[in-house]
Image 1: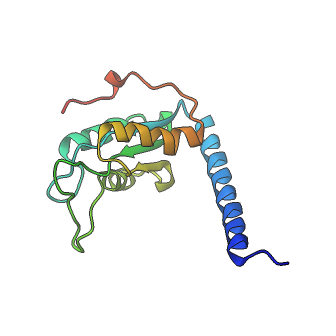
Image 2: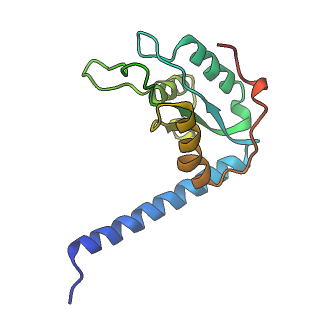
Image 3: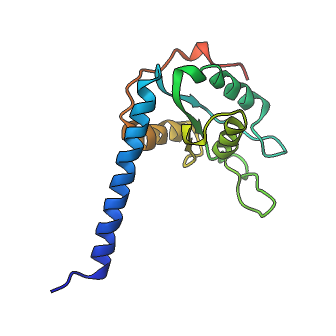
Length: 155
């Protein structure tokens, strides 16, 4: 008897995903071994009228960039908020705060593969939970958090 095609497709997909996760982990470990920190986490905080990070978010991103030589990657947070409708692009699609922050970092010379996005949550508790579940736990992050007073600009 031959196994159903769906089972073969699932098995092949599982192998591909496992290989990808392993290769991503190895790349992250290699980068982390050259850095003081696994990642600098940058909270969201809104977008301006041009769909770019709000001025206080841009300050946070600039503060994070000052630690570029100390970190393997950046984790930018937030899909948006539940308190108002998401801003949309010219085609009517929602613009995630994390995506806008990622573009900001890449425009300032950060390699795209060093920028991670947490764009599942709509509040601070969700940011923390998904940052841990979808990034820190999977990457087996090794560094303890830096004292936030060192890098947190005022709002």
